[in-house]
Image (cartoon, rainbow over all chains, first blue to last red; front, side, top):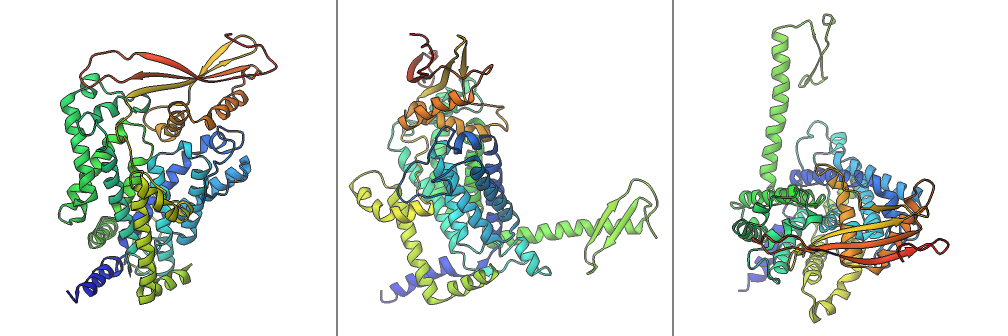
Amino acid sequence: MKNLPMRAVASWNRFWFEPVSTSTLGVVRIGFGLVTLLWALTLAPDLRAFYTSSGILPKQPSVAWTWGLLEHSSSMPLVLAVFALLVVGAVGVLLGCWTRLSLLMVFVGLMSFQRRDPWVLNTGDWLLRILSFYLLLAPAGTALSVDRYVRHREDFWQSPLRSPWVVRLIQIQLSAVYLFSVWAKVQGTDWNNGTAVSYAVRIGDFARVHLPNAIASSALLSNLLTYGALATELSLAFLVWNRKARPYVLAAGVSMHLLIDSTMLVGFFSYEVFIAYLAFIPEDRMDAVLVWLRSHVIRRRLVSATSLGAIPSPAVVGSTQPNGAEITVSRSRSGPAPA
Amino acid sequence: MNALTKLQERFEASDFGRMLISAFLIFTLLGIVVWNLPGGSAQSKLIPVARPYFQSAGLDQGWGVFAPDPRNMTNDFYARLDYPDGSQVVWRYPLGNPVLATYRTFRWQKWSEHVSIDVRSVLLAPAAQWLVRTRVRDGQHPAQVTLVQRFADTPPPGSKAQLQWQEDVLYTWTSPALPRFGM
């Protein structure tokens, strides 16, 4: 009993702070950057309608403790400036270029747009905003980034070890999403009696595709999908923390969200959730994937270059990198190779 | 920025740094729980404590998607635009193709829910005024804008009943200088 507090502290430190590879964090960053970029680009046609004073909401709703660059003024030039901030930031996050600054730009851009007009958002957009804050606290540019390449070109593919507390926070946030989602659902009737999915897919204005009535209205299918959704969400709240069950739980979650995305107007919701799923890929597994990718890509290049060298082709022009390890090959349609 | 990352690394490795980060984590995790508690006296007492941090950091959240029950009604929000020359146009928010355009138009669908189902009064007048400003036809702005919610309840699963549509006029804007329509 005496050792219990010390063991608890040791467990806490091990969970949050024991250094692990930053490869998973790097992949989360890339996923987040990509989804944010696409989310931002799809805003472009509606910037004037959603965010300017001559649009559908002339002023930012006044909510305590909220802020944004468009809070006091939302002229079109200012809206465009914030849009540019968000897009440039998202590209920077995707590439891992000036990563911390890029993440700050994305955080400010997302907060500004989402607070300016909250009535055009869904819960997935909230998750994107939440992830932007968490990633701002993380050394997200440490691995798989331009920042890494600039400083450590020779060992770019090695992901340094760092405390994973932000990745753990993202994992817990995701589990909380599903836990509270299930909690909210079982307070009603339709999720308990197995009819919820049938009602959900028949909301006409929310449907991406209108399913045939035989499918949408099938009681058996509705039961299976309704209870299946609840089971999947509960698994993502609890079972996902078991390393052996994790791949299956995540696969079930991916399937569920892809089904939702294909049938309903949920925007980027599924992909925003998948960003957080990436945080559950164990770092050693991610390292192994990167090693495979690296050796597979470089080996393919070396094999291509070797086979071309063994059988000279007049249509081939090659160049060798200074270190001799990588060979880029380009083909010209006509003419012999230069001497 | 590299200096910041190195400083963070040293901070995370130190006992003091880990203590501070742990306090931050505990406060954040408790805030997530508090923010998602069902409404009640516990939440109403605790949320004011978390609100400044959560709202400022963008951590405010709610995950009751299709909860407690999915909407059992199909909504069709549209606007009738009456022009000074007597013509009428029906405006609906952009839909686009179901493959790619939905990644833009889902925002309009969310907005239409708030306008017509939640009937948030703060959205009705601006919606009508935006339509007056933007739906110019042959050089004319609409003289009257009527926001309409058309809806039908979803039959229970297995039912072969057809949708029974009803309509509610949510809001009407009429130009003071021009004739009234439909009255």
